[in-house]
Length: 165
Image (cartoon, rainbow, N blue to C red):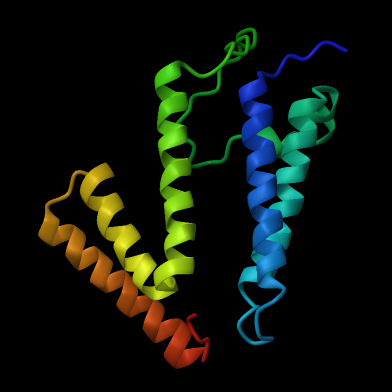
């Protein structure tokens, strides 16, 4: 079988599928009221990403599952009637380093949740990412972090009665 899709695309599909599966597993452990939003989103995400993975792995399915690769009305990419472009061989090294950097950020965030708790880790994560990655001023990053923490506290703690560990 000859693959026309780059391995990078398959890796991204499988990574997204793994993330949605983890979200579904974690969402299933929440209290009944708290899981009403994340669990259906995670399950729908699993299904859609699995269909995307199948259509990337088996190009003949793209014709059957045309809605997966079709661009929407708001798409900024132009559609050409010329011959389809060949797939690129893969991501350049700079893009792989950028992806690795985000994986490190998310890993640090997960570790931070275990060490200092969800609410504090969210604030620190938002502050550091907006300051270092987004190149925002420190005061703007701090305002973003405070706003994020306040939003999470109000929505999850006060309205949904979810306790942060």
